[in-house]
Length: 244
Image 1 (tube, rainbow, N blue to C red):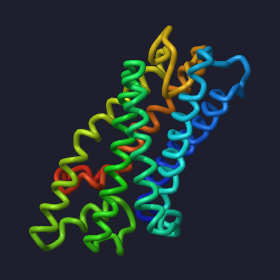
Image 2 (image 1 turned 60 degrees about the vertical axis):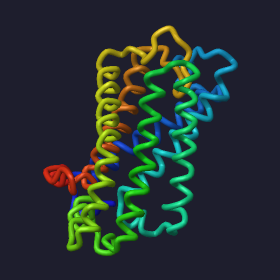
Image 3 (image 1 turned 135 degrees about the vertical axis):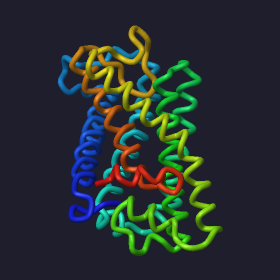
Image 4 (image 1 turned 180 degrees about the horizontal axis):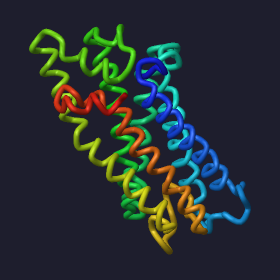
């Protein structure tokens, strides 16, 4: 959670990234249901893929909205704890299982990346809940502040936060790799699996739609890694400087 006054660059940057993720997820969901915007970008998916892709896009849209809600401190703080904790964690856990099934179904590296992305979201939400239980979230005004406050007195608390960070480290690497692969697709205009049916996104059929789809994955992966940087400071203190 961030504020415009304490972390202006991160606040504005993440809002832009996650608004774009939300808009593209809505567009992709509509395309999976046969509503193509614009019509010339209509995906060429087999009929039997329509329902699985629509389910995947529902999970992507849910994640985009949750990430957007997490940016402003006032928005996230206004939500009930049962929603920001158990409900969102359950939804993202189901998304992780779904994406893993899609990755196994089509042997898709992109779906595997999305599996890691949803797992990272589960980790992020659970980490925030852990910080809250440790009593350090009450004065938090940004993720960097939260992470630094987690290094307060008490060896048990420090070791607990270090464990949380260690679990998240490989997930952060996956997020960065997913984001960079999206940037590559945005530059080249190539779909993630040329000539093969999709399972977690509608297949781009034009260079323009492939570029925008790549930008959406880049925004999701890199945006989430950026948002989570503060949580990594118990193990990697320099990452606190990534949320100005």
